[in-house]
Length: 615
Image 1 (tube, rainbow, N blue to C red):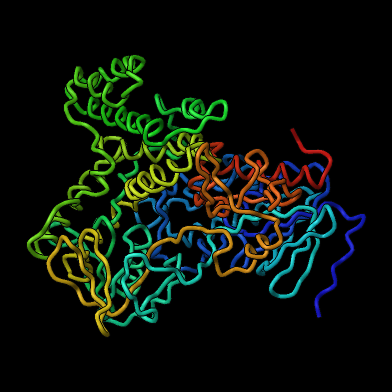
Image 2 (image 1 turned 60 degrees about the vertical axis):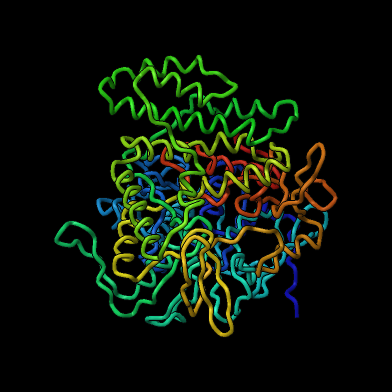
């Protein structure tokens, strides 16, 4: 029998936050900070309230964050003399203390999960008396209208509650069985799929078994770590100073497969303080916003990308000048930037830089992301030698640091340009064709490969594993084929093939509203409470997989095109209306986009259920 829906007449305002990972608990923090009247907040997560599934504190400590602990905070403000609470608390590095992680400051994800739970407990314990917070480890399976101004929320365990406002911060959904692009005639029983290495059934992989990983991004490093160190293998420094791998005998034999043939490179060794703030000189938020003034839509390749390249070129040239014979001239170079030719800003910059002795240029993103394109190799040995040399050269750059190495400093600038890029690409700021092809199709894959990498130690480990013949890489444009009862990996650039027994999909699937294992979003779509974002242009329109929201309030847009009062979304459910919503932290002492998003949702939710919101 269905549970009775409680009568809420006369009760104080009630808000449900569904999804209690970083985004969800950041909303809880902002609700506490801005509530001025009595409010009850129920927080739901199907896995673990505080960390969610991706940052679960009980996952393997071999799985690392890819952001330095000093750059990570979940608190909206810095630590002070008072207790940790909503609006004030330690950064991850401050919370960890002197032991800042086993990988030069890159903490295990499990530690971030414990930190997130600490933050949530701090929010709850120090909330004002008129804010009541209750947590529920339960899966929300339906949210439906309850009259005109409320919602009925139902959980898998059978609980039914009514709320004035519901915030959906559901994060990465568990995908349905994904189509494996790059696998021809796959045997489904031989493929392991998932969107988190921690959730993959890697126990099915037997010692000595030949396996291929589809994708060589961050999840590739996670899978490799679990199948090597996670099975008792050890890294040690050899007699000549290079890292060596001592196998346990429990490892499979791993072949990496990707379009580029290049494992994701590492970020430069961190040389920046946690409170570092980057201020663009050319690719500013204001310039990017101006590209869409009066409702105009920009072409990414023509209007936006030149300024991104120019900003990276500034950093590359400044760093090169600082390393040269006349470092004091860096200020003079900066003074000359006002004369940059707007028709081709990067080329104009290099002409100016030549006057300061700078002869090199920041390589194109395509050449960095596809270094082996068009090359042919006479043997697998020649290919692996070329890959090893490339990874070693990139590691040498990374060891020099993200301030003192021109290449890695420029790539870090690309990372720091995310707010400027969002200012023009979010909410339909590009033409639909340019957004799908120039931005998502060309720029984002290259950008993600080059700026989102792991710490340098991961590349040292990969090189050691390659020398130990535990890991190899198939080659550029590789694919997997099924021949009878055998699976094989082939690359058009490398002779022969590699026979494998299992395939591990080490790629994060693209979010599509309603196309996941959870029943919640299909129900919301069917009931018309959400709709997919339609990217409308002057000549063509494209429906994306995002749930559409009002840019000002983060309120859901229903099937009729009108805002749904009291229903709000943020984070991954809005990806492809917005960009790079998967980020899971703010920065210490900064009012970052992560914090701004949470505050926008909290204020909007409170405006629905209470009369007064702190200005």
